Image (cartoon, rainbow, N blue to C red):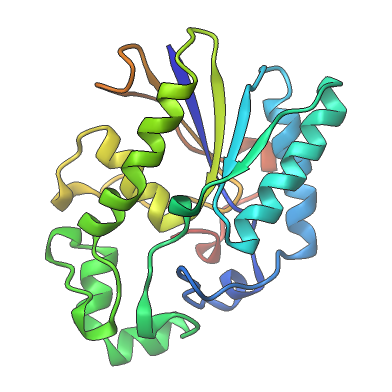
Length: 224
């Protein structure tokens, strides 16, 4: 049984401002995000992780390396970390850097599809990436991670992005594309856990979007 701990990166300046970051846009973590990563490490500290994989985008990479350092300190031994390019966020094309309200005004159909109706999302006009393309891009990396860590005791951390994680996690659970957003969004510094007992042929959801360890009310700017 392999357990995958999916972590969304810490909150950034653009998250706070309500801007789309995507695969090329990026901004720094907020100072309080480092405190929240410390709390996340405490939440995870009683588990033995064999590896951390992270998106190459700065906000995820810094979250992953900070979490690695915190867990190394708490557990007294190093956890390997690998940067995996396919774990990056959706390519949102022309919407990257735009405030949510501005994107909604300029690209209403695209925003409605992206947030509410993934099966109808057509990113052609914004030169973006579809849900199908995102899943096709990420799935080989998830499969490879499970292949590398097949032992019953193997626990792996995967640090990525809210929209990308929502899409790939639900795809692993075989949720239909039309229902991909029905569980809601994923919060910054949240933990979602899947396990597989058959080498990735099927997955079971053990934990969804847990932020209890942050001891705070979730703000709308925390979610995507």
